[in-house]
Image (cartoon, rainbow, N blue to C red; front, side, top):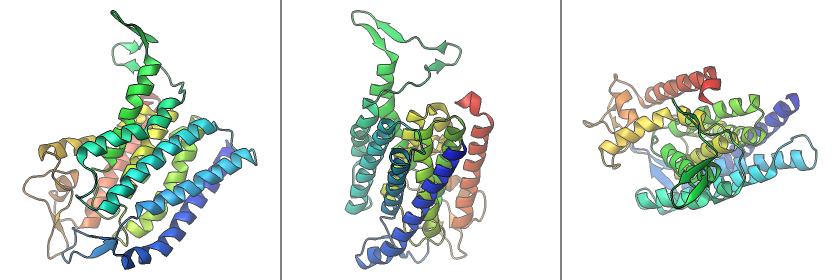
Length: 342
């Protein structure tokens, strides 16, 4: 376990440093190229460089390459490369979708149905590998049988059902969920960092090396990115960040046998889903900037950010810290009741 912790520290450091270096080099160039977006929560509506999620992908990829080096050439990490590379392939394909969306522009990129459909194809690498997770357990029913007998058809393996149905649903659901609760400086990266760090903690103590490596690589990159994305943001993450982070959560939960914990940790996103549904998924998470620097919620709350804004005269940083505090409590509960949730 000490070796695993040491390897994790190396992967984390490489991820953090690579993301930091790339961000420092590319942020000025993004601005020169005109790849900027408007910060809607500021009264002056400043233009901020976008595509910051690409920095996270680069740092994450560099860290995973280092982990593979540690495993293959130094023999430090004992892990299943097929699982790791399948998860990596799915995450990179989701990242590519986010990058396309960011390059096409806000509200001009992929349509809603494309956001829901395309990640299903990105889930193919995870669908193709054999995952020996614990049997599905339903409340008041218990473990499901290995096969479901359907009249005129015969037996259908629940393992096959998991791979062909639940895996793609998990990937597309998590990636799109992470894209809903966004729009404030530091919010997306902070939420993803807390959730992925908790999953990394769980996978470390349960010996799920592949999930641990994925998580620690992404956590290091997200932490580095937050230095540039925290209020006042110098760069935005965009869909590349949120889709990549959401796909990482799904991949970790799938290959690390942490599906219940993953769903529990994303509780706030389910709240956001309900609130967004009230507006027909047309509402945004932005507030209305006031002269004193606070954010006022719209008349019809269609985001968790609006609910928090309605608690008092809060500025953007306070709104984000409140939501991150709520997420921290959820993560702490997940760790406390890890055995029950997992």
